[in-house]
Image 1 (cartoon, rainbow, N blue to C red):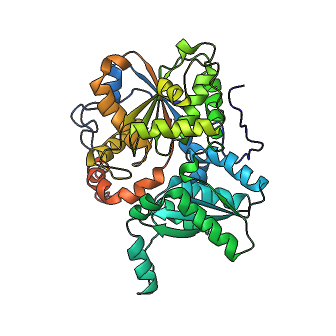
Image 2: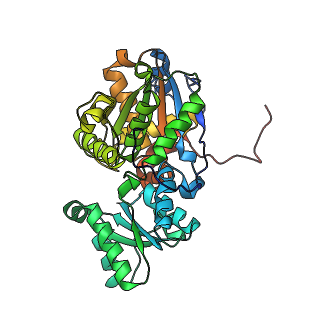
Length: 397
């Protein structure tokens, strides 16, 4: 009724439904043999407890193992089905050097018989090419997502952030598709950054249906997630609005924490995706699709120093959250987003969240922590010390 452009096909390659985890507020205070794990009482869970906040986590980091895990595979179920339906032999997509989307795309392509081509944005692009062509060496490496990109045999192209910004991601994808088709007999299918278009976003329309079933009669006041390319934000926002169309007053507030760009940018991106999906607003009492988005989505500026650039405070938060909950966040998306929401939004507006149930949608990406080992190590040496066990000098007490 409300979405006019419905995909014809969908693959079933993700492990769904993903778990809905309730965080138990069992943070320990005081000293342990490893020192004070709660950093002088500044516990994340104690802060939530003080505000009487119940935190639930939708574990989309568990959508498909190391190869497919994260939010992108929900979109790829629709995108790759469309690629196969259109007779594609290869897929071209684009992202950052440690792109979770590119890694999931490469692995999923191999699962369904498509050849993956990845354009990775990196400041090292020129040096890597110089090392390859002049010095005859290999310096791109095998860290984190890149290891899995290469293990499934993805063809990787690099560009600099400046080239990415000046030329545009869609044009770069188009050029590689054109080259593949002119040089081979293969048909190439383009997928935009993050898989965020009208087709891929259906993954999170279905994701909202999934979480609604899991919540059953359990009330949720706020839904929080990281936002990078806008597709997940579009799917979650539209999905919740349509699922609460007859009882809008009970709909949770939707919070997208941007890890790049600006809130205004995300308003426009989500509106563009909604328009591409054929959203019919004629019965929704709004003047435009952009007004619809502004009315139902609350964007937050959480990028900090910039996309994929971590502060020590953000990394310490990720470590502390793992110690207190056993759940590992990533430094680019979920960790940056939850850090901003808890340490900024809750601190600045505690009255808006007191006595509430908050659902945090974990979008995966933990492999990105490998790229932050040097920065994480100072904290990990203290929180997880390594000591040689004195096996033969042991004295029974």
